[in-house]
Image (cartoon, rainbow, N blue to C red; front, side, top):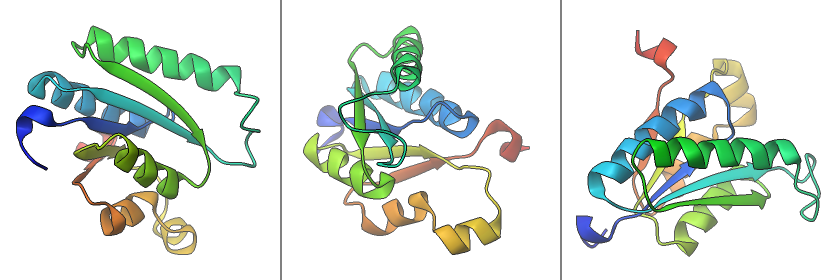
Length: 141
């Protein structure tokens, strides 16, 4: 990270409660730093064909963009990619030279995380920039 004057923020978003909290945090960060916000959703290859974007994905991405703009972010970009979430998030962060990645913490059991792994954990281990993991409001209590 060169300086705070040239930061950009990437939020990994899927419209679920944990990423809604992360979107709120990323928006506040973007507004506070007056820097661009990139909202990324990643669909797995099993979920969709790259040429056929699910209208539901487009709808929740448009809603996320509107929410970020209503929160004060002016420079908001949406990105829809297909692939393995952790790999795609890291690649997009590098492509857009993002200085922070914001993700939500999904409500998964410890066993699920051990068996399937955690995207957040993989991001923390492999990212060249800080990764902010935002708890859902229920987890904060």
